[in-house]
Image (cartoon, rainbow, N blue to C red; front, side, top):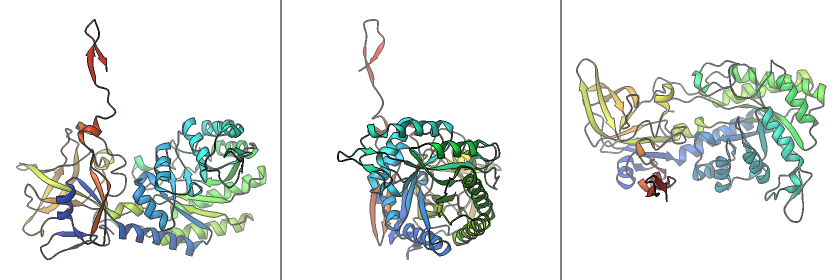
Length: 466
């Protein structure tokens, strides 16, 4: 699926999503504008939950919040039965703001600070996914002094005191393993290959050493093992291999250290379509492959069947949104290229500039009639690399036209910046002919709110912060 499920065109040719024209949304909220379709969000969340439940009854689906952590969207996904994974203290804050139960949250990340680990423990998150030795050592130290904390939302493992503090808490954790599996995707979004900053390598003995240390720590509860191979994956065979290696490792750790594995997670990374030439991965097939492989491997090694957890992000929110831009200046270089500029670009979507992500676009404010030509959709920012689409096949574009770019719901907004001091765009959620603003457009004052203005001079004439 390339466009949100509710995408149509009205009698005048204007594009409609969620029962409202993009032209009307641009008039009300301005551009650039990111438009999420609630019906698509809910439908895709339900498909994941349904597929996982059918494949393995004891399963969980966690939304990978790094794809786009909007409290409004996270709340919708939680209503559809999804938990959440977060990768920073800020994302944890957003999750709690959205009202996600802390027991449904897993805290990921490859370099969590001591403060973030304390925040996760004090909140009572379901699991902390430990990525490296430093984190593990910090958790052992912090959990040993847990009675000094004021744990406001204790998890079910600990025993709460009357004052809200927690005594004898065992911090629940997963170990993130690196299986050394090289998948077919862009190098910058591979995470489970040999050359990766993520996880304890299986082949060096580091993973086993971490398991032994975690199992021996009296205040840690090692619940299971996690891997994540990368993003934009289309071959379920990768998930099969990952699950097999996780179960084999779990079996060895039970034999050597008495670890009883309750959770196995092959991560997420399921691919979506960005252009009409792309295919979308079928998640039901992924779920069946992972569940079947886990059952077979557990039977072979005599392990009880654990919970199977997956973490879709892009595959839920990506196709649920479009980015809407207004066309501005154009520049035709005969025999070379025809540039058409829009009022957004790399500051609201750096993916094309960062790792060559390919998108498509359509005219949204009118019917797309007339001869088609190949144009380059350029952004407004002062970089030659600020190109959204290298080759777009579109009818002649005029200043004021609206361009809609599909599959824009994942990673564009989380990686957005204020480059050139440009305010970041607004975000709206549409459903049944109504639109709800879920992030207002920034102002110039927002852009400069955290900056200190130096206006006063010292006696020697140097500028001093006010």
